[in-house]
Length: 224
Image (cartoon, rainbow, N blue to C red):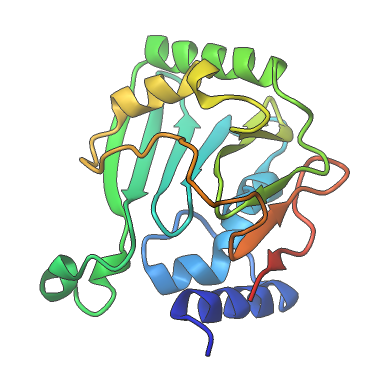
C-alpha cells in the first residue's frame, strides 16, 4: 500500500501532465503537493519574467522533504523588498490538528517581512557569490532525502536556476542562508544538513531533475 505522501506525489505527477501551473506560494498541504513540481523551480516566476518586471527570487530549502521545507519569496520594489517566509518541520504534528483543522499537522508557518534596500543588497550579493562557486544546475538531480537549496530568480528580465546540494557545495560554506535565517520569524527551528546513517543519495520518494537548459525541470522521478 502506498503511503499518503506518495499518493500525493502521484497526484502531483498527474497535475503536471495536465499542465497545472503553480500560481504562487502554497500554504495548504494538498495544494502544495499538487503544485510542488511547478512551484519549487519557480515556474510562475519564469512565466512572468520579462524586461521591466520586478526582480524576484525564490529560495527553497529541502532538509529531507518529510522533515523540513523552508521557502523564501523575495519580490523587490523601488525601496527594498517584500519577503514571504514559509517553513515546516516534520509533517504530522498532531498537536496542530484541533486548531488548524484536518490539514493542520502539515501546514507551513508563514511570516511576512519587509527588507530594506541594504538588507536586500547584502542578501543578493551573498547569493551571487555562492552561485559563482556552485556547479552548473543543468542535469542535477535533487533527491527528497537530501539536504539542498534550490533558487529560482528573475533578474533584469532574465530567468535562472541555481542548485546547492550538500554533496557538491557544503552548506556550511554558503553565505546567503544565514542572512535568510536572520530574517525568518516563523519560529520553526532550522534543520542543518548532516549525514544520516544508512542513507544514500537517491533513497528519497522523488527527485527534482533539472533540465539540460538549466532553467526548469524534466518530469519528476518518483520512488515506490
